[in-house]
Image 1 (cartoon, protein in one colour):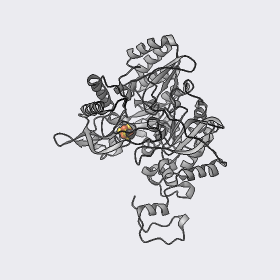
Image 2 (image 1 turned 120 degrees about the vertical axis):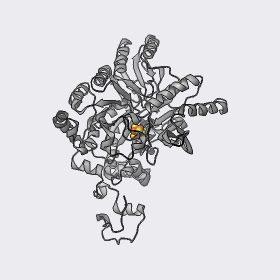
Image 3 (image 1 turned 90 degrees about the vertical axis):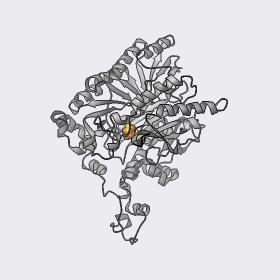
Image 4 (image 1 turned 30 degrees about the vertical axis):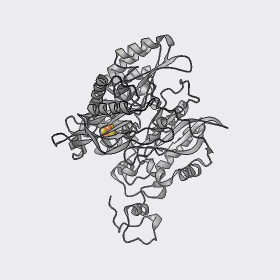
Length: 561
Ligand code: SF4
């Protein structure tokens, strides 16, 4: 938004002479960035206006009492495209609209009368009743769709507003919810998929995750944040923690014992930034309070004026970690935090695919659908297979995979075979194991290119042509610059855009980022994939492109690499 030099001075600068002309940056500083704590409450952009007019959590009652009876056409636009998200509902992209028209059409021209419904699964933990319920909801109300997202959610499609009351009844009867699965609020809490069972885990943070969800999800104290707020809490370094607004990672303090190391301000999309360590040690019992302190800072000091500067990372970048820690201690906790050591990072990412021993002597088995795509039918089959092998627990991973826990040693091979029989590979190819894809043009209104089908085709082609490839490789396919499938953190990150095809016309394609990785893979030198200027491929040429890249890597790698 342009700021004219005649903009009236806000209250905190009253009396100061207005300079005749200002750079955009200094103008922002004088005018404020919409920080509530500094009194910058006006003007409101459309998103802030929607939240200020009515707490988005209130839309649930309107859905149940009005919209479910009167249908899609009766939905108020600010509920439809704004507040519905707080209950996990986004309108779905109308079929047949190509990516070239994404930016030029009005929202109502892009959207269908159906919804994507995100079910939040904090820590990725599901029991069999929950798994069967999701399968049933998918088949009854979602045309048998179900995608495991890279934030351990399950996303359904083709959902009608008329069916939402029945869907909530079913989900909530087994302890599942869609509350704040989207929106400017605390989203699903990422957790280690092997929390509570891993041999290497010293302290299971599940009680803290549960407490945060119980206290703060659906709580109006935090239902109006400047933007989404992403959390990761795990002992093991098996989540993409650095891309979260807050992350707590297990660490052993030499004097105080096991606890958690606090990181803040991670995020991708616009101005990507890896989370930064505050250098404090947090005991398990204090995790919920400290989490709430960080969310409080974000709510009160976060930038609300411009949507593309509203994530916590911008505040952390401007303040620096020392000031952030000081404000957290002084204004939100009223006490000093203990200094703590950094966590020990593993040499390579842990995705838990395959057969692994638990600390109780039983096993967990990790399996890979292709690019997270599953279905209600497959989830119901999975529940049967899991039950038949003496287990009652499933976990979802932030890499679009799933695990079956608590398998007796003598049943693991039978389970691997049974999973394979329903299309879930516990010993997948490198390509299937390492490839993720976001929702893409099939359902997402912001998409420019197709992702899921392309991902499936890519995996098939590479399995056919390069089955012998023996290195770990991650390929993240994104349908637009928003980086929902973490473009910048993959070995090969693909950002959907239109590119010039062989005949000179614009076609679907990708900008390529190479060599990304997180701290878990690269020690303390975590970095983003390099966007190589001019390195683009059409979607059609993608399998050949990746194949050439992989062959070149095989030919050029050094011994042991
Ligand atoms: Fe949609 Fe873009 Fe996110 Fe993919 S990256 S899900 S296309 S917003």
